Length: 514
Image 1 (cartoon, rainbow, N blue to C red):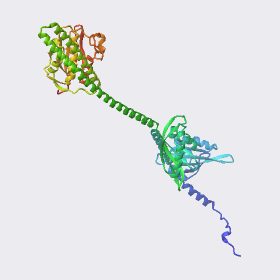
Image 2: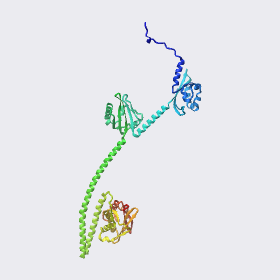
Image 3: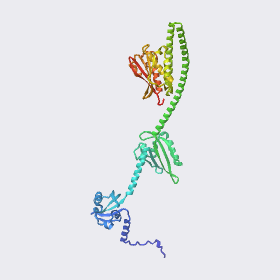
């Protein structure tokens, strides 16, 4: 009967123990880790070839060597605690920096395994593996994680990931900071969704479901309530990852943009306010234009009849004087003076209205100084004009100015000086110039009682009278003087003041080359 040799078990051949030992020796000699056995007297009984790489000694040279002799005093001292632990029957695993074959410090992982027979420690086995590369990778990973963490902090961006197969959520530390939960917090899906504001939670859930179904990423801004109840705005970005057409993972990032939203809101408010202000300015311009037109009408409709009346009074006075009716001529002169005062008040009122509305500087033209003085003096009542004297301390003939405005300012100074100084006393106009700053200087000097002390702080303000507060009028004269000089880039000031008179100065700034 035939037999199937393939089904017949073959007898095991005896293995030569020496072959096994030689085979195992080749295996351990090819291991990169140092392997050795040390007896309880710290004598080496076995070592593989890796020891030659590190210590320059062959296994044959190491066998029988005393451990302190091999390691040296410093390295032995560093390992002594673990050696004693192994001899006490305790397994030891530790990391150590040791010098490599090239003298450079290398990271190593040492494993001491006690050899215990019948409860007695006979020695211990040692395995030492270099882990310098692993430590370098770990350090690079830590540096990378630290860099990523710093970047996330600066950008206020946190990362997240969801395993769709297990439902496990993973949040970065920065995302935990954004949601104000402890670092390492890993929420469930329901917990993660609970931070989304209630009013948009259903929409966000549907958006995520649609992304999983279609593979389309999302980039939306959603309101969030943190674990501490703080309301913030988060920009959420995410998408699904697929394997063999099946969604297996969601991943993305979230950025706290609350401050950005606040700035955008503030910018929008600012733009809205600016637009409202522009509209108000346009309306104000329209009203100012209307007022200017009304002032022009008023000036024409009121001043023209007054000019006609003044001319008629002047003609009447001349006729009465020729008929030697001095009493009647005097009464007409008084009426002329009243008419002149009324016209001056109207001029000042109209001037204030125009100056208050004016924002642009005065447009200057080259003007003859003597002409300015002449027209300003001519604006004074005829019987007062002889009191005005002109002193010239400069040969300058012209200066840049707005002639009509400067005439108004000088006229107001002359009128005050004549009004508040003794009858028949002189009023002096002194014209000089200044090199620093470059300017035309006009002083109006009277011999009156001076300006009262209580008036000085607000001398050039509207409603303040220059000398005596009991004088009639609206106190516009010196205010007009100040505004005219401001529009010229110059200034009006009280130069001298005392019981023997006052000096008011106009400083008309000139540009070089004028």
